[in-house]
Image (cartoon, rainbow, N blue to C red):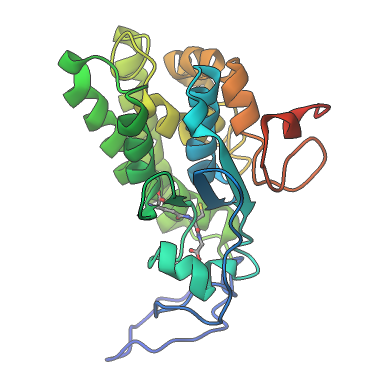
Length: 277
Ligand SMILES: N[C@@H](CCC(=O)N[C@@H](CS)C(=O)NCC(=O)O)C(=O)O
């Protein structure tokens, strides 16, 4: 353990506190610069980045299109959170919380903004009456969706931050959050021992929300921590994650708003996927 920290009477902002995200973290909200957002041809305009939170939305949009909901056609614009695009005035007008993903639904007379990935999933699932499960398991579906929204910050902001991004390794927070992530994986594993999908027999937006975070984790792709977290123990989560990974819409949705070979920085049409490996 390094030297103990004695908090001062009043916290002040040290912009150079170190760590991988130090350049974008701020203790204040609001825009830092004027910048309008682009608007494409489709009714749904998504401003995002292909992190797990961003992938939830592009996976659902691709699932809706795959299921024949032509009204789910969308433009997905890349927002570089490392370069501070989330603090542009146009983005802040769509999401005052300055985080991806953010959606403008322009299908009605008045554009509607939706932020928070869980709210976007619910907005789209209700709009197209799809991926909500059956009426009698709706509360189970909503419970797992909210479980994801409440749990993932411990995996990303807690475990991931201290295991991968903090300027130096500290045993206390790594131990605290590794324990919590393993507890969460066990919660999920026990549920998936008794049900095919988290809400029961139907694949729903709750699975779509959980998969990019916890599927990635059991595949050992989160923070290179597969061995550290002994992810092979969670056999039911692995079975569920492999089944979801094989869905064509999931494969397409996982590629959107990401830079690199075989990935799509921006997405404007189904044909944008043609030729991607
Ligand atoms: N609870 C939010 C979390 C969104 C979130 O944390 N987004 C991250 C990327 S995964 C972000 O935009 N970070 C930029 C920043 O914090 O400035 C949601 O689910 O939509």
